[in-house]
Length: 230
Image 1 (spheres, rainbow, N blue to C red):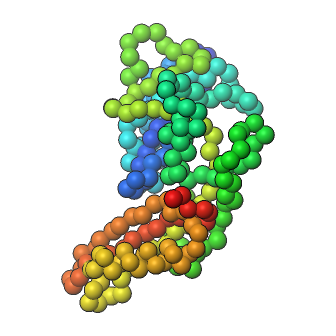
Image 2 (image 1 turned 90 degrees about the vertical axis):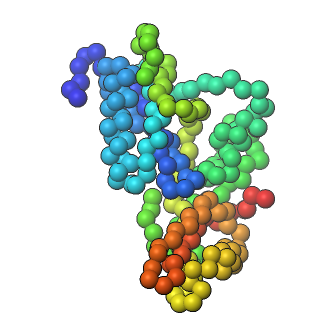
Image 3 (image 1 turned 180 degrees about the vertical axis):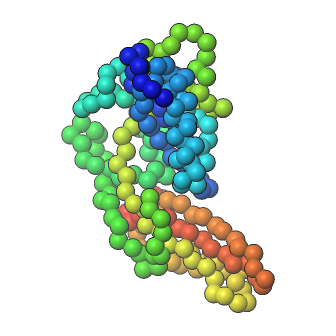
């Protein structure tokens, strides 16, 4: 798409699913003449991104008209929501549920009391290497206004998140008799997690490969060192 003098900056957020139970919110900045064109432009990129990572695009796209060119201190995305929740309850409900792949950093303005867990790439004792990492009718939104296209989805205000590589390991039963024993495999995985010490498990993925004999079962555990949420 060729840029014109009428084009301006938009930030568009799309949502993807990385395997069972893991979701990603991705914001991309683009230049486009209007919100609809910005969403169309980013959804083309979203399709390629989904194919490259094997992470399906879920059809939620939110377009935000940026007031100024992106730069130091520029607001690139904003979304407001009405809620009766208290401040901490609101954060826990939408931004700090315990399932986020993030770490806390010290801030001179944020309230204290949130655990700081440093990033790490150190493998655990059973680690195996793995891959890292319409708008409706009416006027066009002006700078600082949000447009959204979604099949049936809610939305939250975006926040800056510091991320890092999640450690993981995969485990199966020994080949032969009992290879397809799900309960035995889950017990092995539970013991392996205990052997890691104090870690926070972020994701469990179960896979079954049908063989000539018993099924070849695999459980992949994604985790990072840090205090477990009880």
